[in-house]
Image (cartoon, rainbow, N blue to C red; front, side):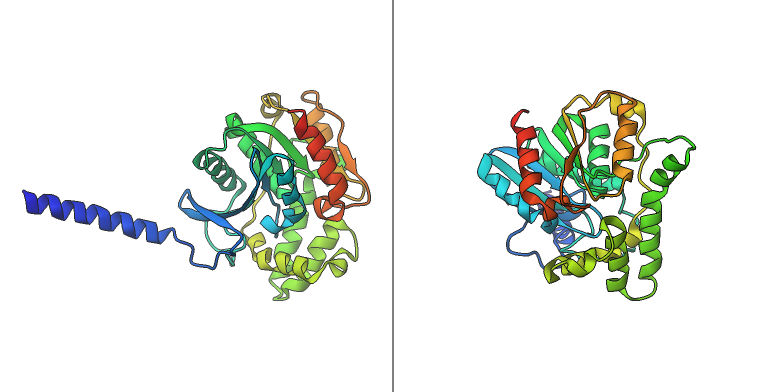
Length: 300
């Protein structure tokens, strides 16, 4: 019996060790990052400061570095966490696999919040990250203190007008164009077209080399991207936390259009427009962006 028990314990410990090895990152983790096993994936994140947690979720073809200018918020009595979602840098993903979706990323965010014992967080989702944040709001509202959507990619049922159709098709056309351009084997050109569609002609050429490198490090994640989930009025009416809607004066009109659709379901404060900026407003005008966000967070 003793031999059986020892063999059993050895088998269990060996199995546990192998399982732990399976989820260890197979890619280098930059020294400034932490990581946690989240739903079977080694999820990396930047963690700065102490206090009420702000969790920042990046959009398509980017990663935690898109929020570098927001890490200073930790000096204002906040703990700021900037995540890199599943299959984004520091992993270099080729777009193959079945575990890449808005819903999966939302599950990962909710699990990370629980695992780190963050309680209720100020959840900030930019662009596609806004779609992720909205899915968290729909499925796990108990982890959210406030919801902040700078050009948050929320998709709602729209009418058959030309304006509505253009807004409804914007993201699908944007991602579809990127996916097709990646097939040509010129990721830099594909990234340039994508960025310029979002933020205006010439934006890519004005990027710094580190910013270009960030986009190129994540560009093939677009191959795994799928249609955004649809959010209904019934979903929006259940949001029982303060919501900040943001856009920029040079952002695509699609985002404000969808915010207007949200307001048909229930009352939301007016959208805050960040001046002298486009879709990447948190990088292009960080002083105003941070001031607006801190003012909102300080009230909640």
